[in-house]
Image (cartoon, rainbow, N blue to C red; front, side, top):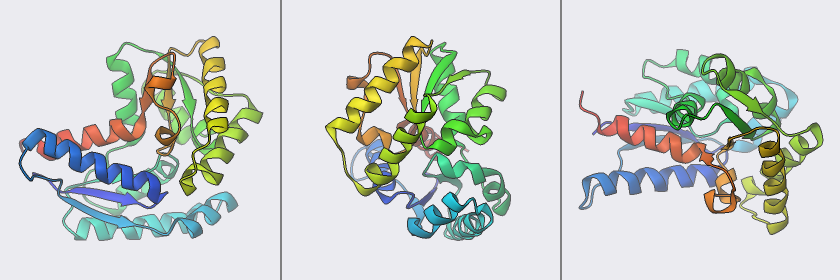
Length: 232
């Protein structure tokens, strides 16, 4: 079994979900007392969140690159960044280490295309919904059409993520806002919705959605489990 590298803490709520799902998935595959081999660095999210909203990606990059190198030194065979938004820095993180980086947007796009879906609605932080590092990658690299909420709703989705979900707060009112926004994206042609923030699964799941919902955390974890158990 290969060792899975986790760069987490952004937020710790979703990283805890990664850890649980990875261990459950490995145990389901191997049985007994088997669990995942994991090398993890969990960063303090507060300074990263501050730098991110200042647009200071240089300082964010320094933190993530140092953490990634520590994970590699701890024996990880490949690396996951346990957040969608910080994949803005995926290229420089990947360059900082010699182990493969499993990109969450690539894993998600492959899962979507496997179901012959070509138009998707994207929920996430404002950065994830608006910038090319994620939305553009889905379109340019994978040929998907991406629908995003209107500007006011993008701000609402973002606020709920940072003010509530990252703090472990789950409100019915916020779920209803998300469901309304998801329904409006479906009216604009979305055949499925990407839960493009690793905390969104705390708020909405497939049982709440009228169309397919792709939870990026679950997809990322499933890819990591397959790679960890693959024969060399």
